Image (cartoon, rainbow, N blue to C red):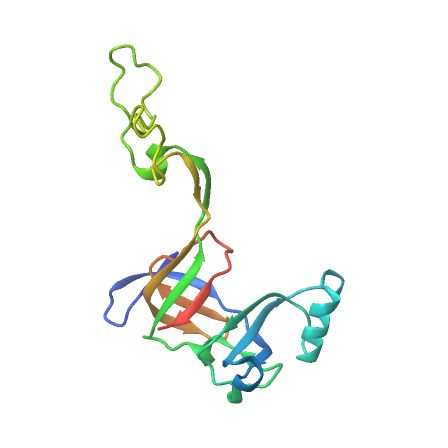
Length: 198
C-alpha cells in the first residue's frame, strides 16, 4: 500500500494494482451457451507449457497462450470480437466503486490465540506451567460423548477466498496499466485478484 493526496489535500491510503491488458479469448452467447459473457486471458505463457487443447483455444482467438483465463458476465457479447484487448481505462472510471476478490495471506498452522483471539487459560498458578496458550475445555463429559462441529480450534489460518466490497477507485494510470484503489485488498504482494464494477 501507499498513499496519495486528494483534490482537497486529504490523505488517502491506496493499494496499487497492475491491470495488464486482457485479451478476449472466448465469447459466450445465448444461442450457443444459454447465457452471455466473455472469457478473458492475461499474462503470456510459453507454447511448450500449454496443452494442445488450450493452444488450439488461444489460436482460434488469434492470441498467444495465456497463464490465466477467467469468465465474466455483464458484458454485451455483440460489442466484442475474439482477440480484442480490454485495458484498464476501458472498464473502470475514477470515482466509481469496485469489489475485489482474492486469497488472503497464508499463515500456516496457527493456535487458538492467534487464529481466533483466545486469551489462553490464565496464569501459571496451581501447577499450570505449560498451558498459557491452549484452548481449554472443548466439550462435555459422557453426554454427548463427542465434540460438536464448529468448535473453534487450532488449524490452518489464511489462504481463504475473500471479497472486499465497495472500494473506491481513486485514480487510473492508463500509461502504466495501474489502478489505485482506496484501502486494503486481500492477499500478499503479487497476488492475482479479480476486480468487479459495482
